[in-house]
Image (cartoon, rainbow, N blue to C red; front, side):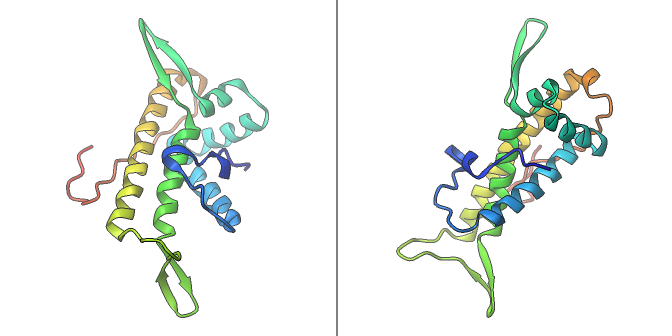
Length: 172
């Protein structure tokens, strides 16, 4: 599967601008996270059709990926597309997995010269905030697919919930 997201998409509030030398790791992470969340949103059959539809440049799948404004009655809704949703999930996962690194002497916290490391709590908060933005967009994608369900007859949906940094305070 060709990834929907690429290294250059990580700008703004999902900025990974100072990455160097880990493009292969990021590419693998992108592939894994995209597959995971698209399968949760679509189910396996629609996931396979979606990937094939992107390769074939089928309009309904490209619109699903990129987003559009659509109307229900007199109301107009903004659907931002799957790409933005996936960037938040990838960013959230990246923040957590880069908090530490395995070395020949064990697992260590990554540091850079002349920098102040964020505490684990702060990194988890950044990750959870990004994840929760992804969940909001995941639910927006649900609404869009539901409204257009005649175009996506094999759709199967698995819901995901927001993460609370304190785990016991989650209201969703």
